[in-house]
Length: 171
Image 1: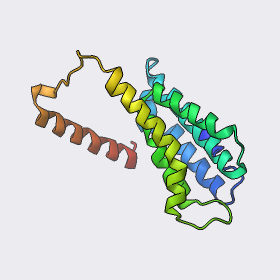
Image 2: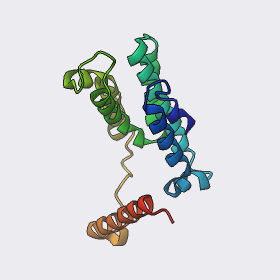
Image 3: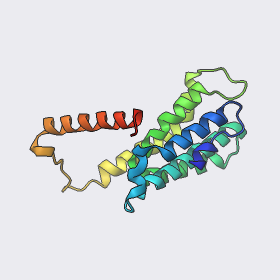
Image 4: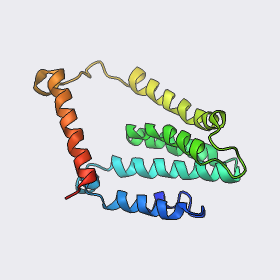
């Protein structure tokens, strides 16, 4: 939560939003699964690496420090190796670059936003190739709930509805 709050502490108006997002993430009951289980260490580890990567990228973008971009990419790669959900970071970086441009830059500059995302997309592509091309075991196979893809689909839809209900009404 503290890492998320530090993303842009000096930006006017964003400090309150960052604090609210961090507080919601820290206290919302949907996230108790990662805290309750000792074996769920990949969730907070992925968050630490991905959030740190975002912060390093944001500081690189603001100050232009050369070592910060490689550091951000390295932390992103560690986040991917921790848990695959870190693959959402390039989309977050694209959205941030598109919606919150640098000082003096033209807002909603699509080419600039794409350029900001390219190194992260390249690491994502390399990870996907390694994970599903090289590391995939021939023994991996899909196991369906009740031996039915349709039954599994319905179960996933029901779970998503329950997660949305919990997000809106945590009690």
